[in-house]
Image (cartoon, rainbow, N blue to C red; front, side, top):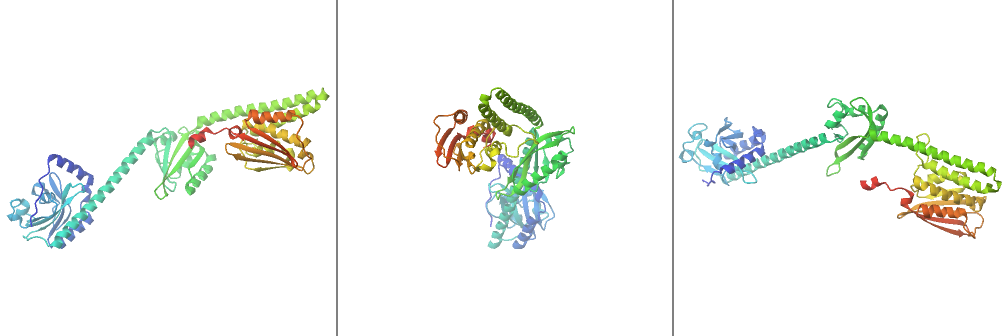
Length: 506
């Protein structure tokens, strides 16, 4: 049975078709075993000596898979498949010698002596013709059986499925290559050192800045070679932090000294984040190294200055306390006032000494931003009689001074008139966050009965000044039968400066 065929494509159609052909990258299909298996089966199914997968180009047709034919290509002018690919169904030529289109065709008059031809078109999803799957006999035939026709069409569809999958795979590969190329260009233009590793932490990429900065040969720091670039004192620590990130998936961040191209060690900030797939599995780590040496040196200079200033302030407290003691010797009538004033100055000195910048040798055991830690340091003489409970709250050098005056005044009054003046008396100090404020409580137990004072003394005014004026808080007193209770509500911003960097990070 003879099927009609479409008209030949125009020049513009030919240009579009050429682009489609290139997208399939068909040149790599020569002697593909999957296609050869299809031509072998087609020849057996249709009981013919020759079966071909033909790709038709502008000047030739060539056969990525063939059964029963040695030739790998022919001229397009002699191609039967150039006609078959334009149709929607199988093109049948029962006897080419009698068909005016092919009777003078060199493939009919000579090898392979085509007489019978049946071709199923190979067309893309866009409808662009690529060629045909054909079967050929050297003898005339009336046609194919329905099963043979259906089988030939199914085989042609199978070929197009293979070609489409191949194009998708090649396209994905090219896209990956293009993405990698863009990443490398971007990474090489960054001022930071950029690196990446496999999921197991094996370093397999560094950008140009890394090699420029370190001066090492390309590839010499792959794998575990990177750790040798660190200062010997930092290597074990860096390995430990990196192993932790690999085991847990936590972000990697560390400061270490990295050897530069001049052989000098410079402080560097290393950071890395894991890249995960849809299932949450880590597929790669991407990291950066940032030179922070100048900032570290500037920070060190500032710390030296801060230490010196703090030391001088500490000496000033000591000098003032000494002057008060010396002056009171010549004015015995002021002895009591002088002792109170000196004790307050000593309390301020202790608070300042707790929160001031420290070296590793002088730093207190307690966290310097800890309210509980400062209270324990300040009220150390009453350690056995005071219990601190509740949630610890952060403080800084700004809040330490008024808080020190407050708790020193409460402790002094308790030692003179309240719970700390009795053998079994005790004080419970509690703290907790309360919304945007901090709640502090001083509760005395087991002391003598207390009554509200007839008039406010200097100590009471000092506490009011510390809490209300300096910290913007509120102070409430209750003279309960069990002992004095003082409740404080202080804005959190007065307790500890808000870290603006943390806010930006969020």
